Length: 340
Ligand code: 13P
Image (cartoon, rainbow, N blue to C red):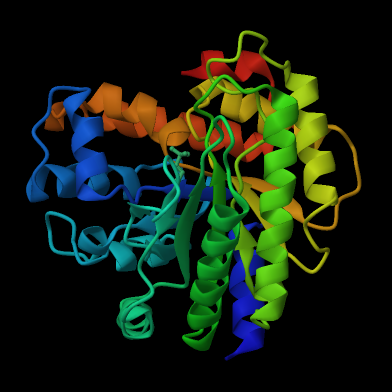
């Protein structure tokens, strides 16, 4: 394990003013996204769309890294330049999703377990040769009547810790992603409690596994009201609770926290991140973004599967990247939305 390299890459991922673009949708998830714009998902349409994302002018200066899917890291631009090379030549870091999705957790109805540890070391060595500097693994925690169970949290956090350890042995920075799903009618206090329990369990598991925390990045969900909760917490409460939750559960050795957007709207994701960074609280880690939907949605809609819309779509991505870049500094203003 090259600790110095891991620490350097982790710090570069959360450099002030920049965040990460999650563009690692599995083929079924990508199909759902493409269905929403009436575009057929196949290898070429996925390639064309992802080429547009990684070559979007004006976004690279706000994006430190790009999370790719296995198919995507092997793809190239129309004129044959491999995607990881394009990203690296623009100063970005290619990353790779390595979990293999979720299974129903045996004996625990309504809960999931993330798989993908088999053969992980070999896969990581190949990805590193292809230029990957970091990896991602997403665990899913569902809130509903009587869940999450301790069994679900512990099993998923242990798998995350094992993944993180295998990544570091391959000199790849692990993004550890415990997502507490936004779905449900639970209130923000419940989300807060579940998120704390989950993140504490994660860091216990990472410590037991002797993971080098300085060479990891945390990707959590924000503390928000459940999507169908009749009372929706406002921006200040989301920001204050999320910061308090993280301060109580994330060690200072962790270099950065990059939030997922997790079903928040495009603008909410930016506003919440900005509010946290504008609070003026002295935090031991950087607070940034690793959004999928919140960065891509406007671009996906603008593209609509037509090559002639590429520039429009790239402009839409560049705008979200710039505004979220500003939110990492607490410098986002709603007027900036009008620059579209
Ligand atoms: P969303 O921002 O769309 O939640 O995606 C981020 C991600 O990478 C989930 O694993």
